[in-house]
Image (cartoon, rainbow, N blue to C red; front, side, top):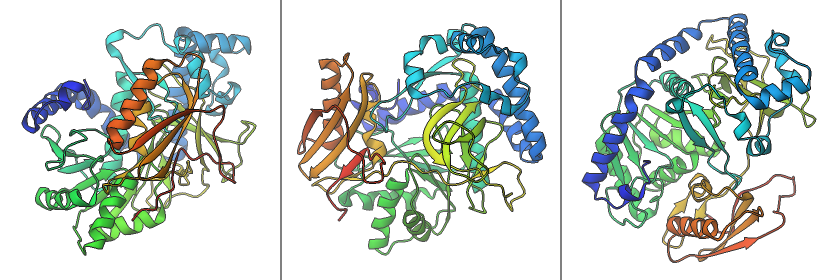
Length: 463
């Protein structure tokens, strides 16, 4: 059961709060129990390792991963045999380039053969991407990578100044109150983790004053959210001459633009820490107090930068991010090619940590949907209706005016009427009944003049 389950959404505020806390309590032992404490302690200790020691750490974990993949994952065993490779041929992190890159399409076509045959079902969790290309990807995690991910997340929070148990606000994509709700509370308290979930679906001028009042009353140590959601809130505060000192603000999941950072830091009187991760659990990038790029969490994944021919890019040169997760044995993703662009820097950070620095991630530029009632819908929110739609290879959302949104779909032959209905209802649920939603099947989708694909295009300026 997730926070957006039908039972949860039908309940009143007190019942939703009870159910959310019961859910958080059941997950707490798995995500933050003894295993978390061990991995988190190791991750903190790894900050003192030299670059050579970190590479040795990667070498040892990659050898274990490759041996596991050869013995227990049919896809990799077949791939290595076809290339006349054995685990003994992988003695150095650079040797991983002997394997081909793994694309999203490879995962879709070889989903079953990418599953490990020796991980028990009770240690397996299902995951998926947010669907920012309109074609979400499904995969499996094991409990170890889930714990390691939370350890990396809390290392970032610790770098920013947040300690486990501190009060913080989450302004992300969880649908924690009904979309049609028109009065506060637009939030639910997770007492298990001292965390206040705030809705990103109700960010309209008529409601933002309630958000501000609640933040003042809650006195959080930190606020975490999508850059666009944080910016909407910060812009309201700026327009009303409001400042709320919050020691820490964290952002992720979207490209953080310089003007967004500047305004958010000004109204919250804070430093903003932007971090980078993926649902695929292969790479994690953390920002330290020097704010000169992101540190690759070298104990979380092994990352390469490749050119358009999948060949290694030179030091400091931009290319596609290709990463191998070091913790997921249920469905290892080895040399997974992301759609993100970056470069690994030659310089060492003045913070003293030896984790390699890489430049800010370049992703697709996306717009904010502007609705007639004043709500501003961040792009990340619009990914949610696509998460369960398997037979769409690509999509694009175009807002023509306040009342009209077109959804262009590049569908597969297996696309069903039930998926059409599910997608339509998901869009309707997020945009409201006043918006005409037109779903259009298209053989291809438009890119801009530079060749970049924009998933959300809004022709309505933000007021």
